[in-house]
Length: 346
Image (cartoon, rainbow, N blue to C red; front, side, top):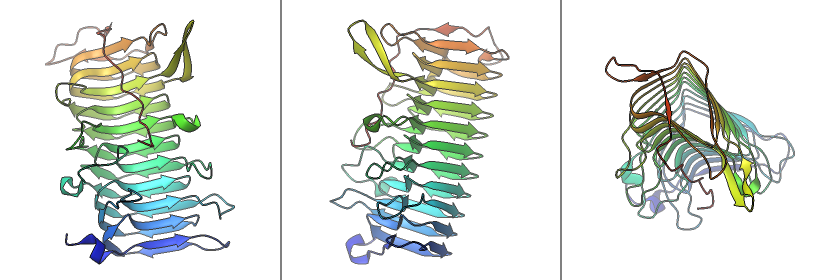
């Protein structure tokens, strides 16, 4: 890759006046530090853009391929689109949407283990949508017909935001090589520091080879339909779950106080070849219909959060088993531990 400090190329547009917008087509930006493209407070249209080899800066510790974010200088919400782009070998986040609404269509985000620093940020991902904390602006993404391959830590993250992910393939998300962090295909989670809820619709997606968890819904709401989750082998003998839905709460005298309930509606979905639970609910409310838990060590697992029980509703048409043997689906409680929420400041 050469010396990134000697080859730094970064395109940055900030909005201080109304009427500014950013349009990039068929542009290649590579060997940068911190950011490849950053549009702050401006509408952006990016088509056929290639961003490659974004190295992690020492301070601030960022390495992001494409950033679209709200700005205190902009009075209007930021709405942008990214189409047909390729983001490769960014050390932290491929595409970051912070307090903006962005359509992401036909995009490939490709990770590279060689780009990972020795001390990686905890919240590394292929695609991230998150509340912009300095402005309080909400974020929303619509991801369609895209590929996220080999992302560090997380494939797609909806954190205190709204997301629609359709016809998208998330593959081979990597836990960190240097610390035992994550390895999730998709994460939908409330932003706990700001108490901002999160919600996502996941349809017609393939999530595979994410070692810890295929899809995690943590203190958030999700609808999952016509989706396949497969091959979650676990990490160092831990995890290996297909879909996890968990409620976030705090314990006070008298019992658990729910701060962010976990709620999911799962339809026409296949989970197969996972090391632990096909579907794991921790004190969450889950409706499951017309779905199959195939070749999972524990097809369905439910756990309480201290005194707060789970609610797993069988809507019918579900199958659990392996190798052509499909006994009735039963919910077990094997004492599994739910994942801790992700700290965006971590």
